[in-house]
Image (cartoon, rainbow, N blue to C red; front, side):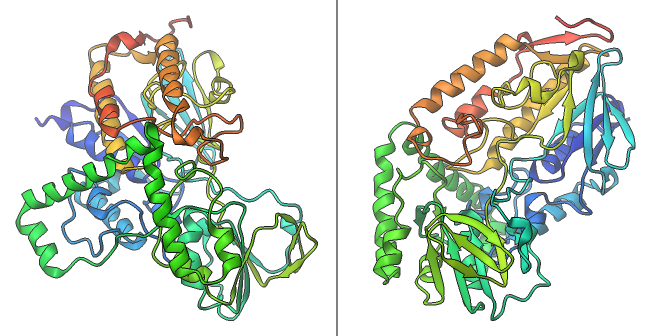
Length: 496
């Protein structure tokens, strides 16, 4: 009898099939847990890499480090992977580890409720179907709910309108007057791709972005062969990427003055690529570099410099049937409006309603801001584990490294549950509060707290997104499960 057949319990539901959900499922299967189901709201896997198909979509983390350490890909076409190739890698993982039989597509989760009497989670799907499981793992990510701009008249526009995360490939932009709202990470990539097709592009910028050159190029065939023939070289190359990226954490968290080197680099690049003095003045940010996400691109500044690209910084007053009206009263006619306004990153698990012990909802638990012990477990919600939860995002390295730390921690939690049959583990509130306090104190002196408004901050101005340190310190913090951090509950045990 194999190890897998001996681990039919607990039953496990995983929400989402992005990098978090797929990686967790693979690790569970390799550890012998076979009673698992992945619930996916769409008709195929991929998460954000399935949804974001806009022109130019690519990763800003090097390919060899934006992949699982246990499943290296030797034939990446470029140093920084493109959307289609990353999605193909994820589909390869599904096939290799035979996850297909465990995935339910078109299974959007609306609600999840913990039953104190059975120690099980009941998950309700959009079609009304209910599923039960001993363990619930959320892998919805932070970039799955598009953020639409809050503008008067948005619903009045009679032309074509879509969000960059829901790109309409059937609509031909050639020769059109296009308004792009937002200059974040998505716009940085798709604006250069469409600028040479449209008649005019009006780019509405609320705040400029710090943009650095992207050290990208195609891999040569001999390099791909070397990665394949010499796995040790592939591992060493990944190791070099890790430490190069990791060193930047010092600048974000402790020595923000080091970032001035990159600020000067961005300014030099802008001056070299943008000849229009008016545009040049608008694209140099007025906030400290690193306070918002630093972007990388080789074609952003040349696109801004195009004569058919109009960079507009006057605030938008409203939208009417035919275009955009700015606060100065100017009307900017448009055939199409593209919203490159990012995601509701701080609204974890939105819009799923989660109810834990004693009828307590996650919204109630997080009324003062999202918080989780080690970004994974939340007090009052037993046997629920989050991947890419509060304060586990990075500004300097690959999120997959953080996810793999979380995979290992969740697996050890499940092994702890095996020692206490029929129990459910609930993190102690005081342990969660202590961890959250340390994280928030660590964030106080970081560059993200230097005064700008960013998607790292929630509605209360609290940074519930970023990890305030090195990724190896997070891995060290999650290397083992201390069962003293948890209480083990048995069916029908009263709260308290």
